[in-house]
Image 1 (cartoon, rainbow, N blue to C red):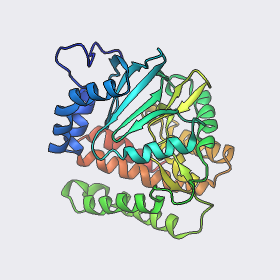
Image 2: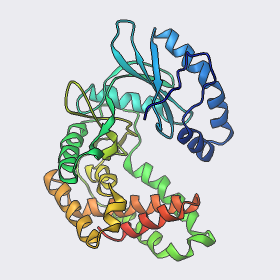
Image 3: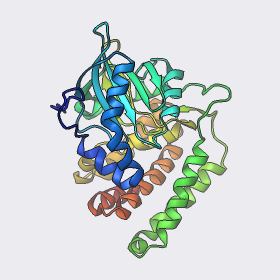
Image 4: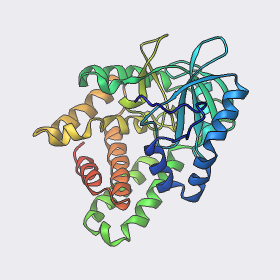
Amino acid sequence: MDSAVRPDAGGPFEPPRRLVRALAETHGDAGGEWLRALPELVRDTVSRWELEPERVLTPGGRSSLVVLVRRADGTPAALKLLAPGARGAHEHAALARWDGWGAVRVLAAAEGALLLERLRHEVSLSSLPEAKAQLEAADTVRKLWVDPGENHPFESVAERSGRAAEALRAARTQPWAEAVAPLIDEALDTREELTASAAERAVLLHGRFRQGKVLSAERVPWLAVGPRPVVGERAYDLARLVRDRLEDLVASPGGAAAARRRVTKLADSLEVDRDRVRGWTRFRTTCAGVRALGAGRRQEGELLLEFATWP
């Protein structure tokens, strides 16, 4: 994760390659324009908030740049600059709603920029043994499920999954999707059933919660980062967590049984309906697999679609 890149060093500034590739895939020319303006954006933000930059985190994320910094009083912090379309305002609103309860705390905010408390970015729940990681993940996500508040800015699970469903329908017409058309149809039917049936009270969700989004911290052992907040039923938030360590599960002779046990343990420990966790897992995993296939990432897509049939 170490990087020799210092935004104030005077030499050429090179953003992480993962960020460059992701922006080219998802944002096209707009992503390129933001990347070209990034060195000046970093310098301006560092100057405005009186920060001392240390290094850029690598490999970093796919929609933001994170620079480890120190504030004027020497306090360590992390400056996060969000790419266009990264919904930074919604991320800020969610983190402000949690106010450090189960999630990283915001120290300052501006359009497209967040100054966050410093976490141990090199240590996530993914570094723990599976059983311990899932236990800590369940404890963390439980804290995040709060009332979203009146007049909140967040979209609903129905809205977000509706866009994903439209993307699935569009993908189904492509020649490369012919072999997976039955899986797509099943996922679409599952989503229709889930959104049509009565569910529990809607709460604020992380939106892309998984082990890698929970980092080691100073003031408490673990804190969530990088939400893509949404409001809806809790089962939706567990769907991404269910497929953590996907490669290990698929490689295991008992992978399918292990996936089913994981659904059961998570659902029961958090008092969430098992069938709804299973349904959202199938839908979200199918969406991810079809996206990967459409982007030419065949191996990743096939792994995801195989897993989608297991829970």
